[in-house]
Figure 1 (cartoon, rainbow, N blue to C red):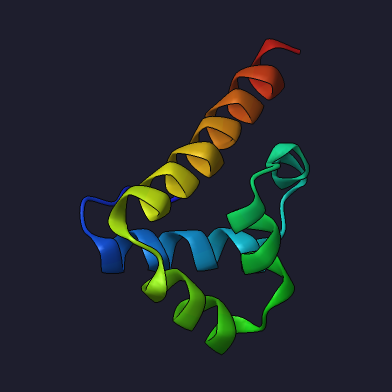
Figure 2 (figure 1 turned 90 degrees about the horizontal axis):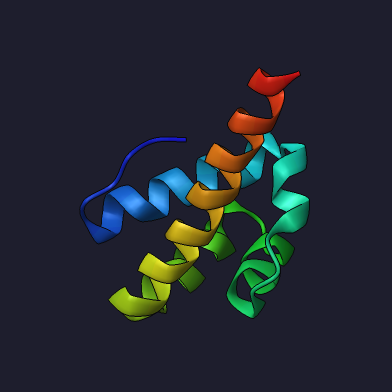
Length: 77
């Protein structure tokens, strides 16, 4: 999971994570995530680019939170 401070970086990071399809993504439940995951890469980039910054940021935070939660869980056991 790449860090992001700008909209293009967040889009790249989100698409990269979705393409690798790790198990922790099963815990992401927002509607924007579900819609994004349904598209191919070109559609994902287009959809994410059309989101306002706040929606994209919230989606990035949701994915990033689940990513770090999965790391915490795997390092405990």
